[in-house]
Length: 274
Image (cartoon, one colour):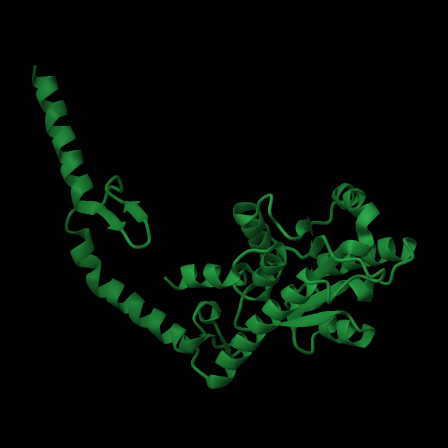
Protein backbone atom coordinates (compact mmCIF):
# COMPACT_ATOMS: atom_id res chain seq x y z
CA UNK A 1 0.00 0.00 0.00
CA UNK A 2 2.92 2.45 0.31
CA UNK A 3 2.85 2.86 -3.46
CA UNK A 4 -0.84 3.71 -3.35
CA UNK A 5 -0.17 6.30 -0.67
CA UNK A 6 2.62 7.86 -2.68
CA UNK A 7 0.37 8.03 -5.72
CA UNK A 8 -2.35 9.74 -3.69
CA UNK A 9 0.14 12.30 -2.39
CA UNK A 10 1.43 12.93 -5.91
CA UNK A 11 -2.11 13.38 -7.21
CA UNK A 12 -2.87 15.80 -4.39
CA UNK A 13 0.27 17.79 -5.22
CA UNK A 14 -0.64 17.91 -8.91
CA UNK A 15 -4.14 19.11 -8.05
CA UNK A 16 -2.86 21.78 -5.67
CA UNK A 17 -0.36 22.99 -8.25
CA UNK A 18 -3.06 23.03 -10.93
CA UNK A 19 -5.29 25.18 -8.75
CA UNK A 20 -2.41 27.52 -7.94
CA UNK A 21 -1.08 28.04 -11.46
CA UNK A 22 -4.20 27.92 -13.62
CA UNK A 23 -4.88 31.30 -15.20
CA UNK A 24 -8.37 32.05 -16.52
CA UNK A 25 -9.79 35.21 -18.07
CA UNK A 26 -13.55 34.85 -18.25
CA UNK A 27 -14.05 37.94 -20.41
CA UNK A 28 -11.67 36.71 -23.09
CA UNK A 29 -12.59 33.06 -22.64
CA UNK A 30 -8.88 32.29 -22.29
CA UNK A 31 -7.43 29.62 -20.03
CA UNK A 32 -3.69 29.06 -19.56
CA UNK A 33 -2.38 26.10 -17.55
CA UNK A 34 1.30 26.40 -16.59
CA UNK A 35 1.07 24.00 -13.66
CA UNK A 36 2.94 21.25 -15.51
CA UNK A 37 5.95 23.49 -16.19
CA UNK A 38 8.52 22.29 -13.63
CA UNK A 39 9.49 25.61 -12.04
CA UNK A 40 9.84 25.80 -8.23
CA UNK A 41 7.27 27.65 -6.16
CA UNK A 42 9.70 30.49 -5.45
CA UNK A 43 10.43 31.04 -9.14
CA UNK A 44 7.77 33.66 -9.91
CA UNK A 45 8.52 35.84 -6.85
CA UNK A 46 12.24 35.61 -7.62
CA UNK A 47 11.65 36.65 -11.22
CA UNK A 48 9.32 39.55 -10.33
CA UNK A 49 12.01 42.28 -10.61
CA UNK A 50 13.17 41.03 -14.01
CA UNK A 51 9.58 40.71 -15.22
CA UNK A 52 8.92 44.29 -14.11
CA UNK A 53 11.94 45.36 -16.17
CA UNK A 54 10.59 43.49 -19.19
CA UNK A 55 7.21 45.21 -18.87
CA UNK A 56 8.97 48.57 -18.59
CA UNK A 57 10.83 47.93 -21.83
CA UNK A 58 7.57 46.84 -23.46
CA UNK A 59 5.92 50.10 -22.46
CA UNK A 60 8.86 52.04 -23.88
CA UNK A 61 8.59 50.22 -27.21
CA UNK A 62 4.85 50.75 -27.33
CA UNK A 63 5.50 54.42 -26.66
CA UNK A 64 7.74 54.73 -29.70
CA UNK A 65 11.24 53.90 -28.42
CA UNK A 66 13.65 52.71 -31.10
CA UNK A 67 13.79 48.94 -31.39
CA UNK A 68 16.44 49.06 -34.12
CA UNK A 69 18.87 51.89 -33.30
CA UNK A 70 21.10 51.05 -36.28
CA UNK A 71 18.30 51.84 -38.72
CA UNK A 72 16.38 54.23 -36.47
CA UNK A 73 13.22 52.11 -36.56
CA UNK A 74 10.38 51.70 -34.13
CA UNK A 75 8.22 48.59 -33.77
CA UNK A 76 4.54 49.43 -33.70
CA UNK A 77 2.34 46.63 -34.97
CA UNK A 78 0.27 46.94 -31.76
CA UNK A 79 -0.77 50.45 -32.88
CA UNK A 80 -2.60 48.87 -35.80
CA UNK A 81 -5.28 47.50 -33.47
CA UNK A 82 -5.29 50.59 -31.23
CA UNK A 83 -4.24 53.69 -33.23
CA UNK A 84 -4.83 55.91 -30.21
CA UNK A 85 -1.70 54.37 -28.65
CA UNK A 86 0.53 55.59 -31.48
CA UNK A 87 3.19 58.03 -30.23
CA UNK A 88 2.50 60.62 -32.94
CA UNK A 89 -0.67 62.11 -34.37
CA UNK A 90 0.63 61.55 -37.89
CA UNK A 91 1.05 57.82 -37.35
CA UNK A 92 -2.43 57.52 -35.86
CA UNK A 93 -3.93 59.40 -38.78
CA UNK A 94 -2.14 57.19 -41.33
CA UNK A 95 -3.43 54.03 -39.65
CA UNK A 96 -6.99 55.32 -39.52
CA UNK A 97 -6.89 56.53 -43.13
CA UNK A 98 -5.53 53.19 -44.34
CA UNK A 99 -8.27 51.33 -42.47
CA UNK A 100 -10.95 53.54 -44.00
CA UNK A 101 -9.43 53.06 -47.46
CA UNK A 102 -9.67 49.29 -46.98
CA UNK A 103 -13.32 49.56 -45.92
CA UNK A 104 -14.18 51.82 -48.86
CA UNK A 105 -12.41 49.70 -51.45
CA UNK A 106 -14.01 46.46 -50.24
CA UNK A 107 -17.44 48.08 -50.27
CA UNK A 108 -16.95 49.30 -53.84
CA UNK A 109 -15.87 45.83 -54.94
CA UNK A 110 -18.84 44.19 -53.24
CA UNK A 111 -21.33 46.64 -54.76
CA UNK A 112 -19.88 46.42 -58.27
CA UNK A 113 -18.57 49.97 -58.39
CA UNK A 114 -15.10 48.53 -58.96
CA UNK A 115 -15.02 45.71 -61.50
CA UNK A 116 -12.60 43.98 -63.81
CA UNK A 117 -11.84 44.87 -67.41
CA UNK A 118 -15.01 43.25 -68.78
CA UNK A 119 -17.27 44.96 -66.27
CA UNK A 120 -18.11 41.80 -64.38
CA UNK A 121 -17.95 41.84 -60.56
CA UNK A 122 -14.99 40.27 -58.82
CA UNK A 123 -15.61 36.87 -57.24
CA UNK A 124 -12.02 35.88 -56.38
CA UNK A 125 -8.86 37.45 -55.11
CA UNK A 126 -5.36 36.15 -55.86
CA UNK A 127 -2.78 37.16 -53.27
CA UNK A 128 0.88 37.31 -54.27
CA UNK A 129 3.23 37.40 -51.28
CA UNK A 130 5.82 35.45 -49.35
CA UNK A 131 6.33 34.79 -45.63
CA UNK A 132 4.29 37.03 -43.36
CA UNK A 133 2.78 38.79 -46.35
CA UNK A 134 0.90 35.59 -47.12
CA UNK A 135 0.81 33.45 -43.97
CA UNK A 136 -1.26 35.92 -41.94
CA UNK A 137 -3.91 36.53 -44.60
CA UNK A 138 -4.11 32.80 -45.36
CA UNK A 139 -4.59 31.98 -41.67
CA UNK A 140 -7.42 34.50 -41.35
CA UNK A 141 -9.06 33.30 -44.56
CA UNK A 142 -8.92 29.65 -43.50
CA UNK A 143 -9.91 30.22 -39.87
CA UNK A 144 -12.73 32.73 -40.32
CA UNK A 145 -13.97 32.16 -43.86
CA UNK A 146 -16.83 29.93 -44.94
CA UNK A 147 -19.60 29.28 -47.43
CA UNK A 148 -20.84 32.86 -47.23
CA UNK A 149 -17.58 34.46 -48.39
CA UNK A 150 -18.09 37.33 -50.82
CA UNK A 151 -14.78 36.62 -52.58
CA UNK A 152 -12.83 33.38 -52.62
CA UNK A 153 -9.15 33.64 -51.77
CA UNK A 154 -6.25 32.07 -53.66
CA UNK A 155 -2.56 32.40 -52.86
CA UNK A 156 0.79 32.32 -54.66
CA UNK A 157 3.24 32.21 -51.77
CA UNK A 158 6.21 30.17 -52.98
CA UNK A 159 8.31 29.59 -56.08
CA UNK A 160 6.92 26.19 -57.06
CA UNK A 161 5.90 26.22 -60.76
CA UNK A 162 3.51 23.32 -60.19
CA UNK A 163 1.84 25.31 -57.43
CA UNK A 164 1.45 28.25 -59.79
CA UNK A 165 -0.10 26.00 -62.42
CA UNK A 166 -2.61 24.51 -59.98
CA UNK A 167 -3.80 27.92 -58.83
CA UNK A 168 -3.90 29.36 -62.34
CA UNK A 169 -5.92 26.38 -63.57
CA UNK A 170 -8.62 27.12 -61.00
CA UNK A 171 -8.82 30.75 -62.03
CA UNK A 172 -8.48 30.40 -65.78
CA UNK A 173 -12.19 30.79 -66.59
CA UNK A 174 -12.64 33.75 -64.24
CA UNK A 175 -9.47 35.79 -64.64
CA UNK A 176 -11.40 38.96 -65.39
CA UNK A 177 -13.30 38.37 -62.13
CA UNK A 178 -10.14 37.83 -60.07
CA UNK A 179 -8.60 40.73 -58.17
CA UNK A 180 -4.82 40.42 -57.80
CA UNK A 181 -3.36 41.65 -54.48
CA UNK A 182 0.42 42.12 -54.66
CA UNK A 183 2.09 42.44 -51.25
CA UNK A 184 5.73 43.36 -50.62
CA UNK A 185 6.82 45.67 -47.84
CA UNK A 186 10.08 46.57 -49.56
CA UNK A 187 8.48 46.46 -52.99
CA UNK A 188 11.34 44.40 -54.40
CA UNK A 189 10.88 40.91 -52.93
CA UNK A 190 12.21 38.52 -55.57
CA UNK A 191 9.67 35.74 -55.04
CA UNK A 192 6.75 38.15 -55.21
CA UNK A 193 8.22 39.88 -58.25
CA UNK A 194 8.46 36.51 -60.02
CA UNK A 195 4.87 35.65 -59.09
CA UNK A 196 3.78 39.02 -60.47
CA UNK A 197 5.60 38.36 -63.75
CA UNK A 198 3.90 34.97 -64.10
CA UNK A 199 0.50 36.44 -63.28
CA UNK A 200 0.99 39.31 -65.71
CA UNK A 201 1.80 36.80 -68.46
CA UNK A 202 -1.36 34.83 -67.64
CA UNK A 203 -3.57 37.91 -67.91
CA UNK A 204 -1.89 39.05 -71.10
CA UNK A 205 -2.40 35.60 -72.68
CA UNK A 206 -6.10 35.94 -71.87
CA UNK A 207 -6.29 39.35 -73.53
CA UNK A 208 -6.56 41.16 -70.20
CA UNK A 209 -4.63 44.08 -68.73
CA UNK A 210 -3.30 43.24 -65.28
CA UNK A 211 -3.40 46.85 -63.97
CA UNK A 212 -7.19 46.84 -64.36
CA UNK A 213 -7.38 43.91 -61.94
CA UNK A 214 -4.59 44.66 -59.46
CA UNK A 215 -3.84 46.46 -56.20
CA UNK A 216 -0.59 46.79 -54.27
CA UNK A 217 0.26 46.84 -50.57
CA UNK A 218 3.74 48.24 -49.99
CA UNK A 219 5.74 51.11 -48.53
CA UNK A 220 5.21 54.48 -50.13
CA UNK A 221 7.84 55.18 -52.75
CA UNK A 222 8.92 51.56 -53.11
CA UNK A 223 9.54 49.97 -56.48
CA UNK A 224 6.15 48.25 -56.33
CA UNK A 225 4.40 51.45 -55.28
CA UNK A 226 5.91 53.35 -58.20
CA UNK A 227 5.00 50.57 -60.62
CA UNK A 228 1.39 50.39 -59.49
CA UNK A 229 0.95 54.16 -59.76
CA UNK A 230 2.69 54.45 -63.12
CA UNK A 231 0.54 51.66 -64.58
CA UNK A 232 -2.67 52.92 -62.99
CA UNK A 233 -3.53 49.94 -60.81
CA UNK A 234 -6.91 50.01 -59.08
CA UNK A 235 -5.42 51.07 -55.74
CA UNK A 236 -2.29 51.11 -53.59
CA UNK A 237 -2.39 50.61 -49.83
CA UNK A 238 0.40 51.53 -47.41
CA UNK A 239 2.84 49.57 -45.29
CA UNK A 240 5.21 51.17 -42.81
CA UNK A 241 8.79 50.47 -41.77
CA UNK A 242 7.63 49.98 -38.16
CA UNK A 243 5.56 46.91 -39.09
CA UNK A 244 7.32 43.62 -39.76
CA UNK A 245 5.91 41.20 -42.31
CA UNK A 246 5.21 38.51 -39.72
CA UNK A 247 3.24 40.99 -37.58
CA UNK A 248 1.41 42.73 -40.42
CA UNK A 249 -1.91 40.88 -40.37
CA UNK A 250 -3.72 43.85 -38.80
CA UNK A 251 -2.48 46.24 -41.47
CA UNK A 252 -3.86 46.31 -45.00
CA UNK A 253 -1.84 43.12 -45.57
CA UNK A 254 -4.39 41.14 -43.59
CA UNK A 255 -7.36 43.48 -43.47
CA UNK A 256 -7.84 44.00 -47.22
CA UNK A 257 -8.14 40.28 -48.10
CA UNK A 258 -10.35 39.76 -45.05
CA UNK A 259 -12.63 42.66 -45.95
CA UNK A 260 -12.90 41.46 -49.55
CA UNK A 261 -13.78 38.02 -48.26
CA UNK A 262 -16.60 39.64 -46.32
CA UNK A 263 -15.17 39.23 -42.82
CA UNK A 264 -15.85 41.74 -40.04
CA UNK A 265 -12.50 43.50 -39.86
CA UNK A 266 -13.67 45.98 -37.22
CA UNK A 267 -14.71 43.09 -35.00
CA UNK A 268 -11.36 41.45 -35.71
CA UNK A 269 -9.50 44.56 -34.55
CA UNK A 270 -11.77 44.96 -31.53
CA UNK A 271 -11.01 41.41 -30.47
CA UNK A 272 -7.29 42.07 -30.81
CA UNK A 273 -7.58 45.20 -28.66
CA UNK A 274 -9.19 43.17 -25.90
